[in-house]
Amino acid sequence: MRSFLVALLVVGALAAPQTPALAEEAEPTPAVRNLAAPTVAGTAAYGRTLAVRPGRWTEGARLSYRWLRDGRPIGGAQATRYRVKPQDVGRRLAVRVTGSRAGHRSTSVTTAPTRTVQHMVPARRVVTYSVRTKGRIKADLREFKRLAQQTFDDARGWRTSGTVFRRVKRGGDFTLYLAASRTLPSFSSVCSRQWSCRAGRHVVINQTRWLYASPAWRRSGGSLRDYRHMVVNHETGHWLGHGHRSCPRRGGPAPVMMQQSKGLGGCEFNPWPRPGERRVPRFG
Image 1 (spheres, helix red, strand yellow):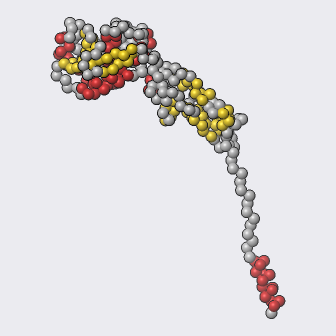
Image 2 (image 1 turned 90 degrees about the horizontal axis):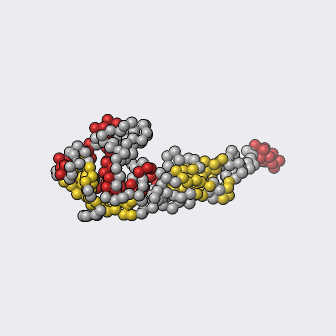
Image 3 (image 1 turned 90 degrees about the vertical axis):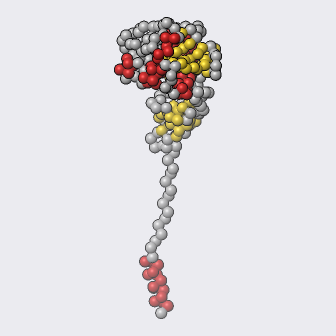
């Protein structure tokens, strides 16, 4: 009987499933290593060009770049150099550098951000202005004030001459008027019901033009917002001491001091001062 039980135990042991040996764990994929941090070189100001210094990486690593504005990717900015744009003013820029290599995991490192991006020219003097109306006003006055100040603050505008514009409640160096079209001749004999004008210390925006732009501008397909930029810049330019200009080159952008509301002479519509117009102004 004992020999029979022993035989059963032997057979059971042979029939039991064998536990396989644990397979060796796979080696983890190595990561590309950044050995020295990348940095941004250059002056963070509108119109200047910045460059990324990539630092040091694992030998053979292929690098790619993505420029960031306040931490968010800038569309199309994926080169080692970046020309600072108007919309960068007041923001901080950085670059995300990614290293990749076959058989390795990619690694991304972001540079320290630049200082806050500055205007093209440091502030040289401050101009104050107040806003008034004349005649029956249908336009939104709060919007007029807000959009006019945006035009003055824009890095592409007269701010490129180093001039800072600040609105005050009354008085100021000049008065920015939003005026009903029929009231324009009351400012000066040079002002007509059809257009905006500058008369002495008054920069006068024709309400009809503010609301609807000009026929020539509309035919061009230009936006109403760009027209408003242009007309504020043009009439303020007169107060700053700039005269009218003509089209310098067919197909090129018109000077902002060209009478673009009336026609272009072969130029393209443009709401901002051109480089040749960005001199330090003579006020009023």
